[in-house]
Image 1 (cartoon, rainbow, N blue to C red):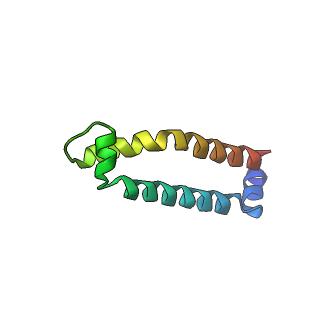
Image 2: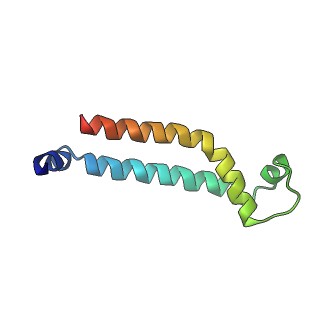
Length: 83
């Protein structure tokens, strides 16, 4: 079992997972920055007043379909590293 985990270290799987997670977080924060303060997004979702919670809701609604693909890619990379 230890040799299996050392194989992950040798093939730099841990480093690649950290890089992939950093890219995903950067993408998520960039999308949230686009949504935060965007009055057109509020109006398109039917809200007439501003609230940070509403911006978070809109971000979640916009990221959910994209999150499917990022989760799929993350699982692919994880499974590929295991076999």
